[in-house]
Length: 517
Ligand SMILES: [Zn+2]
Image 1 (cartoon, rainbow, N blue to C red):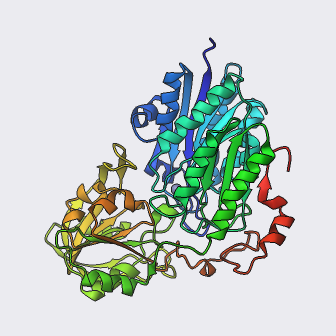
Image 2: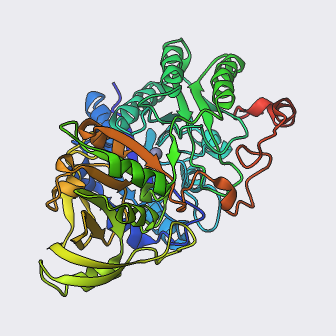
């Protein structure tokens, strides 16, 4: 039996085109930039795409060349320098090894926007195809917050998105893609990936899978995956904060045979996503409403109330320094609370000139773009502790065992609230992000945090109640305040009165099949 040679890489970024912080090479270095054996050592045993690729590699006895694992915190467009520098080793490895290479597996996000084009993943695949030609089997995994482009479908035969949000199946999805690649390399199957869209920025609940209609859709997707000629069905809630031509929720099917039938199946799921476009499960409180609920809450053995600032989710490319929720919690006089993160490198530096116990006057947060999420808070703070590295190792379902860092950080107390002031942007999704710095959220009455949905994986189990609010930061659910200019119209919810029959007539029924549409 032939021993297949497979090239692997991970290159992920979710780009919020409204974020004014460019994503350069240093942003990748901050979050994670590892090559070859170093990446394998750090990631193969964890819930990562690379872990799934390598698991398949062992099962099928592949000769694997892993080039790079590059991740950056969601933020503004990826600079040309970062894009060129980080993709070059992948392209170069493919060039050097194309004579022996049988297939390629890439862990991608699907919502990367470089500063010179709309579609980072499409551009990477284009550069790869230029080297390996049109027939090399390529499988990619995507985050379900992908904005899947026609180019991705044209250039990768195999596309598999995670089926969870909070994302807890990276490894499973990667193994799935790798299994399809194996069958493709053996010549057993000849997959193609089709895409079906509707004119909407995102699925009504951002694709959440802890509850809601995505669960039934994914059940149907899994059932359809069992049919002959069907290899993967993916449902992408999309990433709406991207002012690009191909943004929005999609269903993809990686299959062969009767593609019209597969498209009809995907269209049924897409129709359901469209029909439920107004059915948001979250009730988005104002920060004042949220603070009042927190003030009245009594844990009494149930665990704390968790209040999430949905709009200032650094995981969606926001600045993480929105002050509106913290201001409201302070104004309400909330006691026995913790809050994090507040991203403010200048204040962290200032605090590192003091000692724990000192009283320090700080001007906290709201500095990057106070139009979104509030102006700086003038606070008298007590310094609780200093942490020069801000390093922690995740313990939950999403990042368990993975090393991450807030950069230098400080914990301060202002009235009844302990605040985690950090240097590096990241969303709150693991208890260790508090625990490693002396704050035990499970013992608080109130936990304020910045995250949309990922926090639920670790924080819902310790919570007596969970509420979400919209602070008006960059991931506000009020999309009308964002300066969309390039997204094709009409699109929901920017446009509310859409003639869907007309749209389908004008857009091939929303169906894209490579080589056919
Ligand atoms: Zn995601």
